[in-house]
Length: 177
Length: 275
Image (spheres, rainbow over the protein chains, first blue to last red):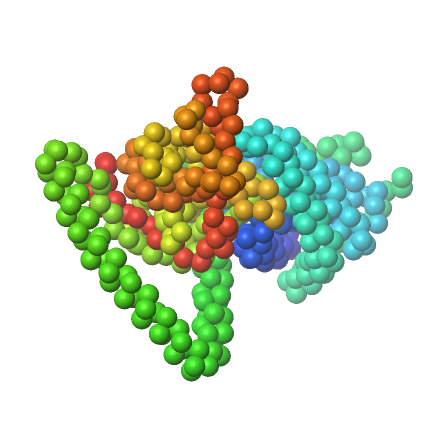
């Protein structure tokens, strides 16, 4: 029980750090009309390494943290992250989930899926869809580059934080494909 | 059993979403405020750190540079003194004409300068978080300006921060006029292509108004509706074309690129707000 809470709090602290870094990066990128977002990184470790309840709690709270500073309905990003968590958590047993590369690639796929989903839902709301599509494509490319570069560091940070909290993730057996 | 194992994350998520859906709106609003106020100190601390960084970088300037800056500032102050005298004369003239013609006077504002804590520019919204909020008397709907014209309006007010929605945001519409023309046109932000200054859409432009890249037209606030004071610079119109119904023209306004790198804005707080 306490172990789960420690795991959740340690990973939420990491999510807070990442969200703050991305916010500062976006502040600096604003004159170039570019935005970075990396929801995949908030999900990857929790979905691949943690038990369902703890991982889902971390992901939902991270989503609500993002929602609080966004102009979207409160809870939307949390729900989308939760769904992505479900798919990735199910796939985790078939993957060598302790590998950093698997974590980074999973984060990249989640980023892509969420970008496409949000574009489908909201692109019509923009007054000029073609400029909006250009912007989304540029944001997606930049976000994927950021995720690929920062992913190994962030996964190591989460691992280190859990070790520091005295609650490293339990080893889960891989299911044969 | 393995099948239930696979469905378990979705089952748990389903229960959480169900509980979320039946939660009263007030609880969600409090939760949102709680999450926002939790992260506000992080943003504010980062902005203070940036200010400190600027301060130390300014300290490296030589005395000669400071003397030159002070000389330039003195010249600027002298020209502003002249403008202030002119401004007083024009204000008196407006008051005289309002009394003579019995016109309702424009609302008066108190200027509240605020540092920008964070710029949040996505494809869907363009916002600035500023370092003043309800504790400094800011109100939702108050216009924000900078040296180049209109920035936007205050969309959210929190204890020590406020969120300003920029004129480049798709959610912001206002009535603007061409400089020297008093017919209002509809202005909506939201064309934010990468690596380019933001643009805005114009609708209901009268057919006899022309603008080309060689002779662009300035767009300013109309003052209609009472939210924005009249005459604030909004953008520059480079092209206009007939709309599909042929009754009006549509076009695009290019916004000032400085909107993307603002570090300070001034919020105009109405002195006699409409209750």
